Image 1 (cartoon, rainbow, N blue to C red):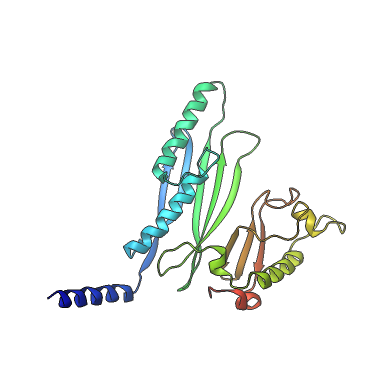
Image 2: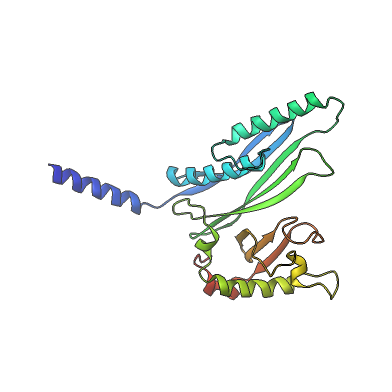
Length: 241
């Protein structure tokens, strides 16, 4: 009987592993404007529960930390907690500075950039304004394995980092326009050699490298995007679009 039970369990596990993962996305909307202005839209995964939960947990973790007022990331804070905490911080600010007309804002807009059997790329564009001359904007690319919901790191995507970096540097030089002919690569990277960005995402047109504001030299206005056509980098990629 024990042998039969063990065989049955093994068969069920194998069957579960071989089941096709089914994923869809629907827009999740969160809005609160009675105190601080908070508007969040992001693609929420639905379908195969274990995979969808992994994706959603990571998305909510990133969004929550975009709103985090502390200097270090909060690993355990939920998105709902982050919304409440941001609003609470604003109320404290208004209590301390009653004459201030400043209205705090936290806005996040997420969308799917690319979807294939090998990878799903989601872009999160955030704008946080808690006073000062202007708010802070940034874009975050998240690449997921659609088979298991795991968030892919850079070394999960790129197989030959040295060769990839050569192609990326060449594309960077071709696609950026320095202010004058005397500017060099070191001027972009604060005296250092060429560096890959933390944000790399898949699109229909190619792999995109994205440098947010202030990640490269301050004279670069807004985000800097470099597109690498897949036919130029396919041999350096572990994940095939």
